[in-house]
Length: 99
Length: 229
Image (cartoon, rainbow over the protein chains, first blue to last red):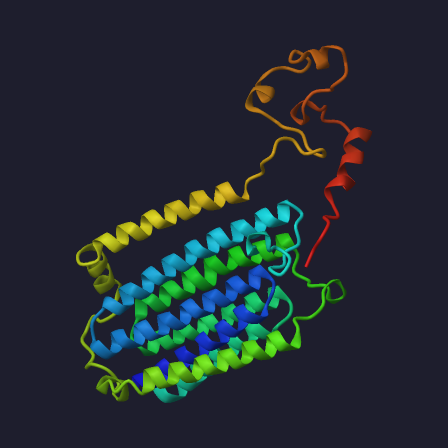
């Protein structure tokens, strides 16, 4: 398959993740949608690594996976902390920083 | 054969992504993401990134998603529909328009970029491309600094998660503090309150028999958290 097909899949997945971040209100699902967007970037990186025939893009993808794991770690820690404080788990109601 | 596998995996990846966004129950969202990640691993294999595909399945679809499932089970998966109004129609339609515009823009940016390599299957395959040995060699030679920075970032994130998720704010009304010294000393030799019989010791000192009524009335106070979805 041509590299362009993989890039098309990447664009579709990224757009789906962006739509999820904009429409959902549960922070857990918003984190899942962020994962989708990072994964879309990973597909593009690995497709370009295949296009050039060297491994730099794959290293980049692995680092992106590490960053995604850190983000999940902190995000889920925040969700657990919110739950412990008995606050509603809803990004529309948690808006103290909104101004 | 590769075409058939590509279209199967691409269909799985896109439907998984749309499922994550559309399903109402967060638990099924997580399952849809696992399906998406497995399809993605197949795409990575087709691109000859063997090590990244294996890491995707083991680390991402395995470990990270188990963490998600734990938190969804802890916080409560069901989203009771009567507690909340749905997202307003204008917000939903604006988001859809934005996502469609983003997709079209990405298509134009990527496919119209004029890169000659996009219309090919990529560089000719060299033996050892994408294998663990090549990735390891790159990580320990050319990309040693990003590798170390990534490991440091993981350490910071682990410490941060522990700090964020721990209990804080002193003793809540329905729980008692158990300190290391209270576990070490024998019953009734600790505080003045114990000596005058006002306090029957910390939970570590409770006798092993049937629970006292004090313990019984503690139980329901823990349940039924306020708020929700």
